[in-house]
Image 1 (cartoon, rainbow, N blue to C red):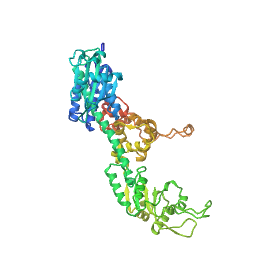
Image 2 (cartoon, helix red, strand yellow):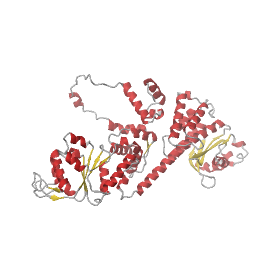
Image 3 (cartoon, rainbow, N blue to C red):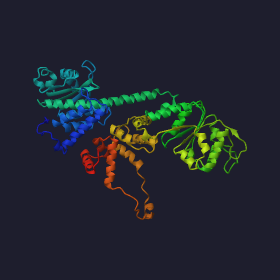
Image 4 (spheres, rainbow, N blue to C red):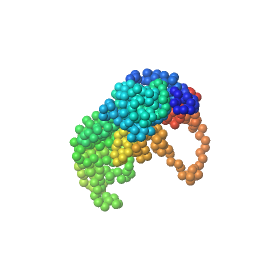
Amino acid sequence: MNDPRQGRKRFSASDRGVDPEGALDEASDIAADLARSGVRVPGRPPALSLERQVREWGDQRSFQLLYDAMRGLVESLDFESLVHQILDVAVRSIGADRGIVFLGGSLDSNLFPVAVTSVDPREVRDLSEVSRTILERALGGESTLTVDAASDPVLADAPSVKMHQLRSVLCVPLRVRDELIGAVYLDRRNDANAFSSASMRFLDAFVELASGVLQRAHEHHRLRQENQRLRNQIDPRDPFAHIVTGNPRMRRVLGNAELVARVDAPVMITGESGTGKELLARAIHQSSPRASEPLVTQNCAAVPADLLESLFFGHIRGAFTGAHRDTAGLFQLAHRGVLFLDEIAELAAPLQAKLLRVLETGVVRPLGSEEETRVDVRLIAATSRNLWDAVREGRFREDLFYRISVIELGLPPLRERRDDIPLLLDHFAIKHEADRDRRMRFDRTAIDFLSGYPWRGNVRELENFVRRALVFHAGRAVGPHEVAELLRPAESEPAPRPEAVESRPIPPPNRTTSFKTLEEREREAIVDALRITGGNRTRAAELLGQHRNALLRKIKRLGIDG
């Protein structure tokens, strides 16, 4: 496509140091991504035809422009920002002086400019009148090219054509979900024939692809509004509604927990650290007949073993040095309510025996007292370990195991419910940005990367990650590079103190240790990136912070199937 500006040479991808075939592949990847993600370009079939169309544009030597135009758009989810980006790219790519994006379904009263480039606000109304006929055609679904407005029988007599010296005008329709929502208007002053039929074909193609991204942004905005609306409608009497999930396995756990809440049997909740065991215990308590009574929680691993007996059962004044008054234990505090004991596998054997006795008899004897106190407590226990292994190894009493595991609920780790990660990202962003004026969002590539991240700390780690992101990136889009920076502190070990390094003896060589070469580590990183992005080489390159062509060369050199 010839650049209309005087003295500028014909466009060539190679002039910019870009491999044409690689750029064409990237443009095809973008088109395929849009189609696979459910984005449908109006008037075009899905994936295959979309990629074929990109190839056709590539044959017309405009694929690099198309790639450059689309690359910045596919990551954005803000509708207003996208409209301005689309106009800016259109003006630069076509070589127009000015541009306007109009939105609205007709020329009557609701057609209005939402993005303007290089146009004085006072001239917008004049241009709307000049291009009335052109806009009518665009809103009817027809692209219009005027090579010389000064000699056009319809436009030549318009005062604004002479006032603003308009010559070349181009206008194409803008659609979302097959619905005409407006038009993209471009013009050049003083130069007739500045735009060609090739210009119009390119702008048609670009706006059609861009409309698919607009559709995705519109859908994202609608889903966030719906998410907020549903959050506002959550019945405060339904504690389980606050546990965010769409995962079938997790939904089954919650369904069983709702049934368990109605009975008074002991419950054992198992799951890795950070999976939400205490959150589930609170939901069970709040949904149970004991909801109006206290919920007392205690992490058994957080208290020294010699203090646990006093903590559990209380003590009387003078029971030991420092016992200056009678103190109720956890069981007395939880009377008629629920006692939640987290990490119960950490209990020492003597305390396990005393806990079993309380559960069997319903009475406690405070430390130092000869009197017993009757208590009515429902026990919910939790552990991140395999409690049955502890029983087999003799570290946990088998009779206590059966007493507290009448009903068992197992929470899956986050890596086994990856489909919940986008929901949780959105949930925590809304939850923690309530006191902020600026919104933060994760772009598509970042969400894909985070959905494949191992999250060893599970939901707790994910929530902390979102809170860090809000601190550093409030009001901005978070992409893969920002994600990498936010995750790096969590993955890096603190540097040892210099004195520690100096005093550390040098170990003898370990002949059994195998060290990975740089090439092996590079191969692993590429394989992981391809796995996370579903084999998409463009997005894998972005995750790795490399140019796509460099990644392709490494894939070939390392013999990676991707």
